[in-house]
Image (tube, rainbow, N blue to C red; front, side, top):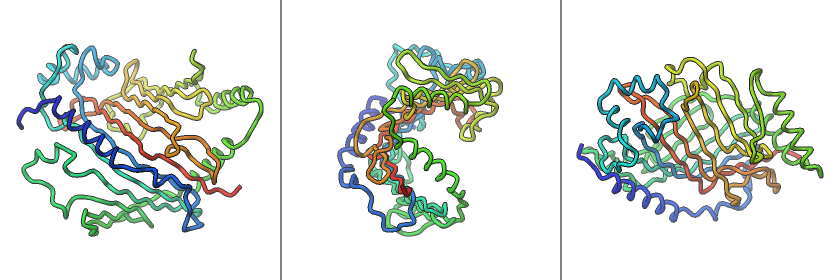
Length: 338
C-alpha cells in the first residue's frame, strides 16, 4: 500500500463529518412520539456518526496504557517498538497501514420494546460510500448488491438488506426477554419523577443508597468538584472485554458520576495501575438528547462518547482502538402507565 499523508486523511475525515452533520436534520424528529402500537412500552432513537481508527502506542503520549505486559509484547515487534519510541513532538505525516485510516460511519436506529418483553430494532446505515477513503483504496470495490443498507431484528430473526432494498440475509437471532429490564427502568423513571423540596437531603440519601448496593471492597466518594467517584474491584473481565484474556491479576473499574448521580461522565478500567479502557461522556441540553416519560423530562443522554481501549491486532500485538461518536439524536421515550 502506498504511503498516505496523515494530514490529508484527517482533513478528509473532518470534512466528511461536517458534511454528514450539515446534511442531518434531526429537528424534524423532535416531536413527542405518537405510537401506532399501544403495546410499545419503551422506544430508543439514536442518530450518530462515529469516527473509528487504530493508533500505535507511544511513550509520552499513552503512558497510562503502557502496562509492563503490554511493553513486553511491543518489544517483540520492531515496527511497534519504533512507534513506541517516537518522540511525541515529532509530527507523523505518513500512514503505513489500513488500520490507521479513520473510518467514518453514520447510522440511525429505532428500537421498540413491547409490554410482553419482545423487541423490534431497525438500523439504517447512512454513510455515503465516498465519505470513507479506506473503501476507495481497495482494488475491488464492494458492489451495491453486497453493501448493507439496513438491518432489522424482529421475532427472533435478523434480516439484512442491501442498498437496493433487497433482502440478502435472513437468519435466526435469539433474543432475551426484556421484562426484567423494563421493571428496572420503571423504577428508574419513578425515582426521577419524585419531587422533594430538600434537594441536598435527596442527594445524601441517594449517595448512601448507592454505597449500600456496591460490592464488598468497593469505594464511593465525592471529588472536590462535587462529582461522585465509584471504584469497584473486579473478579473477572466484563463480557465485552473478554479478548483481554492476557490481563490477569488485579482489575478495577473507576466511574465518575455527576453530582446528582444521573449522568456518567467518565468510565475507566484498570489492569493494576494501568489503563485498559477509558470512556468520556459529554452532554448538551438539546431537546434531541432529552429522555421523556409522556411529556415529562426524565434525564438526558450523551451528545458524544469518546472511547480508547487496548486491543490486539491480527498478529496478537497491542494497539490502541480510538472511537468518537457524535449524536444528532439520542433519546428514550418511556410509555409506562402512571
